[in-house]
Image (cartoon, rainbow, N blue to C red):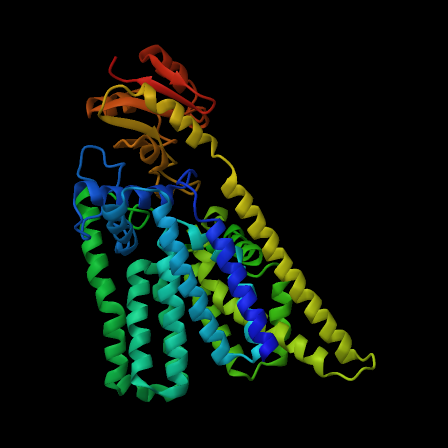
Length: 497
């Protein structure tokens, strides 16, 4: 036990040091989500701290009120801004502190349902999973979401053992916070429903506790997202909720892209490749244990969400949606690794099939862990690189001599199948500290640009790779508008010379 405790402490300390080392960097990546959260935080301090009305930068001529998850996270950043001023690192520091709570609650959960060796192994895979590491310092709500999400699972698991009402309602409150922080967390309700039915059968539907739990968990989210929907209907701004089509269609059953994309994201970002083999061994050796059934039901509830939202979750850029699968996957990998360690420790000195199997399990576990460490190293090095677009924004900013709105290249309005996409790219607005419009990369025309000019756009910050998607578009802009400045990837046109 002392050795296991020492290993756990060393792992926890290493995880903290790695996150601290990745925290102190600006919002210099071309991340739409980070730039949106940074802008919303900054706009709270400049335009009012009412948390019911988050404001984005790509607002056009409107006030910028946007449909999104409840802005608990950016509002907290804004509170710190009020005291210490606006610093990009603030959001990362808050995410890093939240991540320590995530690690702690996962350890509590693993310790409760796994044997000591398995719990330490599961914690190692969870703490050094690349997705968990990525959201640990990202300026995104996933840090808060995962804290509440893991806490909800931990307290519910305890309740199934202790039957303490305090554990049940702690889980309900945590679930409510997770849903408010990220609506996609609602899938955890499937895990709770199945565990509750296993515990009490259908008589659970006749108990007032079940309805109280559902009310606490769901009503705050229903109220917030109803309000958020009204913001969308009134102002037309959304952070990918109503302005993008995420959902499964009949083509899911005819186009292998969706299931292959989901599985690839899972294999690479969640399971560390060979971790799937370790988990399968753990399930085979401990299929009747509570930890195995708990983790498999949890993982199934995550896959229900991933499949329902397959039009997004299959995309490579959307790998962070798979962060929900990391906890149950880590429990299963820990279960397999722990069984291997136990077999290796308990076998007799003679070479036997059990000893060989145990050694192979341990080797596979180490290989999966090394795979995760390599992915984290790659992410860490990417975070250290200077984003070319960020450097070019610093070159562009002095040339924007007139105040006012700008027009910026955005993403496509629809995907290859004709489904709506959230096309608003926020990073250039954030870096240039301007408000304005985005133009869809698949709807670029000179009349469209002139229309934005008539609405008040002073400059068009055009991305060359997007201009190339419309034949002759750049040439027509050159003829109509003078060039203010040009960088490797951007051309700035003066719309009102």
